[in-house]
Image 1 (cartoon, rainbow, N blue to C red):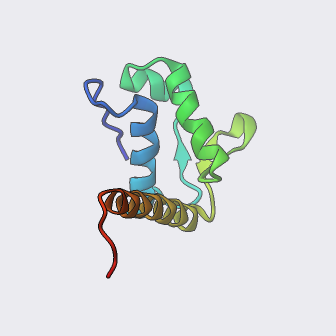
Image 2 (cartoon, one colour):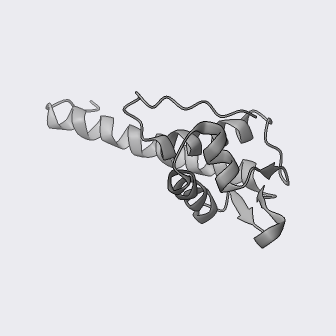
Length: 111
């Protein structure tokens, strides 16, 4: 899977990386156990600072979507599809809550 970064986007670059990895997992382009490129290689390929890629990898790892196996590399976690689905459900729920609160703030009710 090839990442595409839009440096002109309002979305931070590290978030673009995280989102695209999530999408790759959802679409089956990144299967459990699939390797990710090393941080320096990924940064060089994308023309980015390695710290930016490291931040994305750290977020993915903290969400247990990827796992780092030291010098062996970084891989998609065995349960990454389930984890990504759970993360996306949480994001959708938070977005829905924001809409409901905005509607209530405008005086709208469910009745």
